[in-house]
Length: 250
Image (cartoon, rainbow, N blue to C red; front, side, top):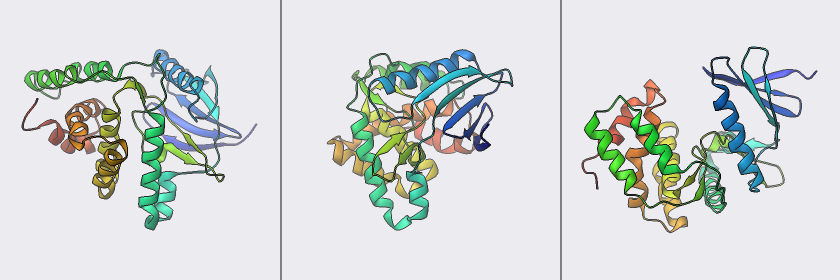
């Protein structure tokens, strides 16, 4: 049996490499329905032809939980390349935007709708008062309903570039079918939290290449901040609450 190399550890899962495959091993307390849903989303995206690691299966784990196995994709993530070559950050940022726009052209009708996903998240949010929840829900209901493939967490660490120049997109647990502006707002939020020096540059670049008004992406920002707040990450709370506390709702 191949050696297990741990790549990531979180409260609900451990991700490790074992030979030619990557395994996400969830804790026993993580709902089986959540594991199966993540595998289902990945399968839908893979069936649509999106460049993703090949899904190998879902199996019970020795810890009493469940595991998802995927093929290991060789190469480096955009995050690794940005860290190694800070002078090429603009080049890699443009690569990310190009990949995000290409991803949005796929149609995966069996995925959950982005608007409904946002609505469900906001309705469970107890950290904000009822009036703010109402205003956020009104904003979401006022958005046009689209059907573009939205990754839901397209950040540099989730894109692998192979040596031949091709790419592979990882971690589809948050994917949905909906509005490209919402997906861009999520990526902008992640940059604001993790790489603030690139956040505004990303937003301007995405909107220019997508021929999309920056104001449209901005209308989604309080909504995606509210959704992110449901993850209860204390280090992010101050920025998220600032995004939610907008002066006007339209």
